[in-house]
Length: 123
Image (cartoon, rainbow, N blue to C red; front, side):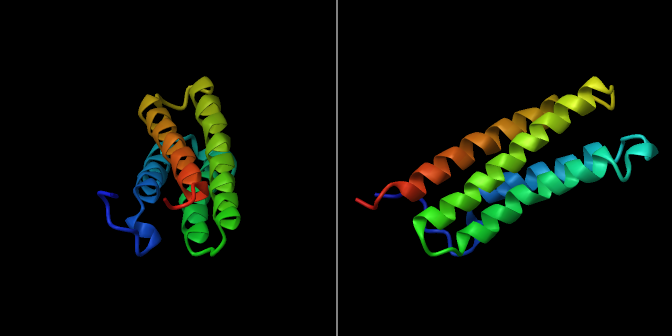
């Protein structure tokens, strides 16, 4: 028996909620980047971060299991892109980002579990 009711909208998904929190953190963190990065790293980082919950939302309404999982895989790819941007921004000394990296890891684990759950036939 499932303890949580079925999600009615993408906003009900815990993985989407965490991904949205991650995006909000990326916006705060990248807001402190040097002005020279406004159209460079900050912009790329934000676009990749926004892609994560956006693809979760888009995949939520797809009807086929494989189609849904494809969007979760795209979200995971964007998350890996963000992982690199966190490494780069740390190495460029743009600020500490352990909290962002920790949240990224949590979203990654949740995305993996969600994709596996989508592919698991109902019992």
